[in-house]
Image (cartoon, rainbow over all chains, first blue to last red; front, side, top):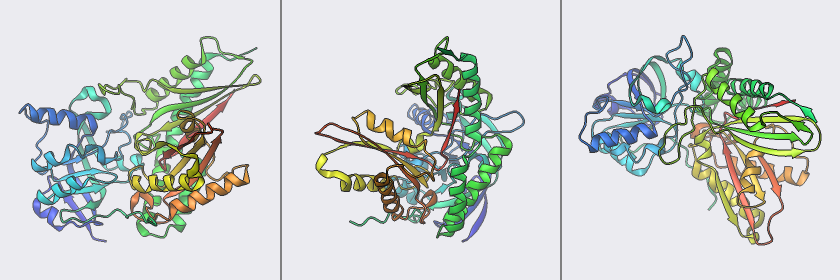
Length: 181
Length: 278
């Protein structure tokens, strides 16, 4: 299984080499955003206002971390289920978002948009929030602080372990359930 | 009457919330170890390895096992001869708020339409059963949203019977796929009413994963459903394998002659619950 060490922001050539099943160790800055933050970001776009971060080449991590205890940059920080962001993702990919990080299935529309705009969907291990937090070296809230766990945070990650679930070529990693009928 | 101080209940509940969110129950850990050894896919084995490492790290550092520390669900068996000055609901709620604050646990409760976080994980969801005697038992479950979203209630026709139940459950797990953080645990409520089936389904999730239902017929049904679900091949985190589900726990209740209520409460692999007795 190929393993790539990549730095953010991600480029088209980074995306071109990735295939479903590849392991990626991600480094650099990523942004957190889940349900409420996506709604706010969409509202900003509708109003023609600037976003809290540049979408070009960006990676969004679908996570609402637990509070940081003293002496740590962040609490537990594993992925949340991604389909809830499917309504927002195509628009963000069209504006330059290169990767989303979460767990669980994406809609056909999101997968199609990722092919059109050269983007990937990474899976992180759900329920391993303590372990994943070890790869986050810094965290700061950059927008929507009032949303608490749902605020947008800028995270600095080091060798953040990811699997390519959907690549930019229609590849799918998830096992198709074997049903009799 | 036996008096139990509200402050004692609050302190025990706070401790239980912090402990359950950082210490994986032994029975769940044993299943992870079994999966790590026996899972048929390398990707699945690797997930179990990560989950075991995560559990060790959470216990060591007191970081929550999962950032989703859930809504706080409580099952209370309250002896009819027990008196809690100030009230048991308040005592449990205050303990939960303290535990979530002092344990740096995530507060995940919000207004359903405005989506504004309540800020302290309130309300605690408290189910009280009155039982004879002067004892008090409180069970706490941290129920995450990802697996809860994959749960369903349906009203089957009586003619659909066991075959209909099996079909619905297997279909539900298949459709949920990787979303609820498999390997899952299934709490199945069969019978009762529209609101009672999910209540017993969720409470069944408090059972130990390796226990055997005292009714051999139900034990057999649980084994049959477990095998049927695991044939789906979804595997740990949806990456393929034989461990889609760790256990099926069935609760039955009599129902109306016109109905066959069925509730499937999906629990993620991070099955966090503890209990305390007074």
